[in-house]
Amino acid sequence: MKHKLGIIGYGTMGSWHAENVRDRIEDLDVALVYDINEEKTKKASADGFNTCNSAEELFASDVDLVLVATPNNFHKDYCIKAMRSGKNVISEKPACLTLEELDEVIAVSKECGKLFTVHQNRRWDVDYAIVKNILNQNLVGKPYQIYSRLFSNRNIPGDWRTLKESGGGFLYDWGVHMIDQVLCLVDRKPISVYAQLKKIYQPEVDDSVRININFEGGLSAHIIADSWTFINEARWHISGDDGTAIVNEWFKTEGKIIKANVKQVDWTQGCVYTSNGLSRSMWPRPQKEISELPLPVQNPEPRWEEFYENVLETIEGKAQAIVTHDQIRMSLKVILAGFESAEKDCVVKL
Ligand code: NAD
Image (cartoon, rainbow, N blue to C red; front, side):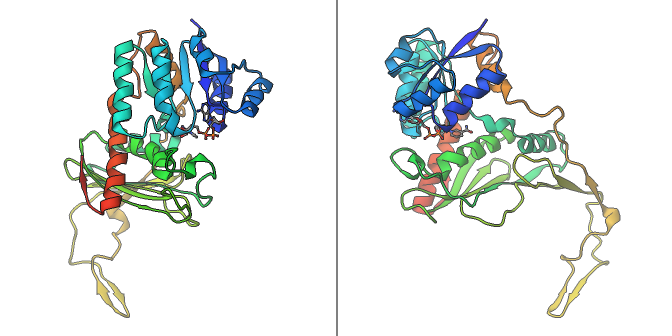
């Protein structure tokens, strides 16, 4: 059965969805587009999509699925209105700016029996898939530190993302992807958050994010999203009690795993002598005590199409949504704990 998609907001992401749904999602037609800006509506028409002049017109149409791809502060109202009009809904991330807003949206979803989910598309990134495989295949033993890092040197696109009232800033923008990824990777309860948010280039919103999530059982995840950094560190760095793994770059598959063959350390051997003193800890392990493993690259590559395929199957009652309400809620809880932690300079319990 062909489903019909209505898109609200035909900016960079709304138009990306339109083209990619048209080209890659067989059972979904882009039926109608609405944007508050006439120029964007004209662009949608020029791109070959039907357009309308108001959100109400879109809600009154026969689309059965609505994508909300406006600036973040408009997500909540559009999601609620769409579901109350009998439509299923995908919100772009972040779904909402506060837990109160999100709980309202989730309550309407339950009341109306309509799907509400969020486009957490970074769950299909190749680098993330490798890390998932590393942990699932136990390739570094029991993990105790996960570093997830992304660096840009272009700062924040100079639009609504620079404004607090629109839900701007790097934590809501990229942090939400990275938090969602980490929460999906770790099968343990997150218990506390410590964050440092800086305004390096932006006067109003964070553009440098450090957010640490502590999980039960002694595992910590350190998320770094910087928008003004000119030398990068590895995208992922995972330490476990059997070894260490790195994935070098976002959306790439290079990196390595170093595993300890011998866990016992022979302290009678090995020492580094420097002109300032000596160290036995800094002496590198002999080659025979470690092995290098290739990264478990997912083959075939993860398919972003799965997101929409799952949405359609969920609407048809054949599947459960991959991006669940509980996951959406916990990501937002961590983000909000991050804002509180940064403001008070303290650890915030979840
Ligand atoms: P954008 O500024 O390029 O586009 C937003 C569009 O919404 C514009 O065309 C604007 O005219 C329209 N708009 C503004 N207010 C509106 C309103 N009240 N009603 C209807 N239309 C309105 O922004 P963007 O980069 O496309 O971001 C849109 C959403 O997509 C944001 O929530 C953002 O976080 C998300 N996004 C997600 C990803 C991802 O990979 N998942 C990537 C980029 C953006």
